[in-house]
Image: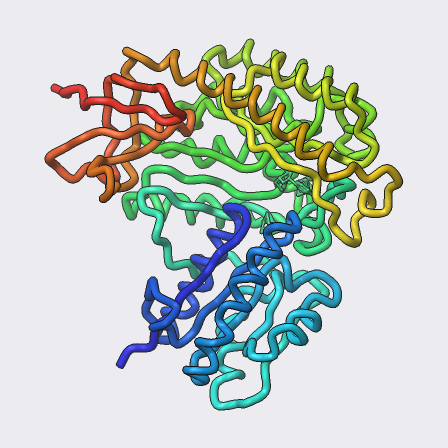
Length: 440
Ligand code: SAH
Ligand code: SF4
Ligand code: F3S
């Protein structure tokens, strides 16, 4: 009988894509996917540690497997990703959950197959965390399940050390992939019928800084030289390095979506300085202005954090003010979470939970109001949706417009992987409802 794997993923899109790589490795060893842990021969947890609740979530789910492991001792449990890459985390995990069979980190994720081979037929757990970055791999080992969308790494790691952030510690220094390898991977995906490509890096604007030659805007131009219809997105762009050359590249190529994710984090200059973000609120807004001048129909999304150490009511109000001024279409909002090992973790003036909670509620209220307003402006318009999936419950096809907004519609035909024009009939929530506009 075929062996089965089940992968549980936490965290960002980078992790989601890395789970596709783990799936590729498992399939090359004869495993097939199962949606049930009970049926799996191996369960892999690909973890995140960006905030405390991400870790608690993983801990809870790993702990919940204890019974199953007792009933089926041959089932393997593997834990890897950002959480296990933190100093001492592997030991803590093993102490708490001695039934875990394999522990790996971020730097050896692509070596997972070798770890699995080592574990098979051996009683002792295999624990292997590298403290140094591994070689950048250029071949695509992933088994993709997100058609018609695909993720492509352009770089790994981060050099920015924002004072609250654990990523540089668990992902190592910036390493860029070779431009030819990125272009070849994208071309291969397009040949295979993928329609939307998202380039991934913690700060895509520093692409190429470590190896010279091709800058990020140049990389985008190389990809878009393939003159056909597809969508190209990227995540994430750090405002400190966001410049006109990049905006010009976006304006020049129809494949580049006019939604830019530009995480601002805070609106108070004092807090931005303590965060080590290297821009002021004014500089941020000037960049937004430049973007809107060159690409008038551009929309903006962002990440914002409240309750950073020493944040006062006045600082928080500056954040609200900036949210109004920048007119974001969408914002991911977070309560600051103290991450051991980061500079901010040792700062005086950590903010009490009640204050953080009160502020996040006020922020979310403002952000939601803005998103709703944007939604209403969609009514009666025709938008182009890339159909991604069929929602069995709603019995509707679904997909996103260029700005990332989810749209639903009915269709007799299977539309997955097609660009479809819909006339928006309702947009009261965050998503759109529409009817297909007949095409000649
Ligand atoms: N590289 C990206 C961010 C990756 S993390 C960038 O620089 O924009 C995604 C988001 O998580 C960040 O933008 C930030 O808003 C949030 N985040 C990071 N560390 C956090 C922490 N310690 N507590 C709460 N939110 C955090
Ligand atoms: Fe974290 Fe800052 Fe790097 Fe983004 S740029 S991953 S927030 S350190
Ligand atoms: Fe991503 Fe979480 Fe790691 S956000 S980079 S999976 S810490």
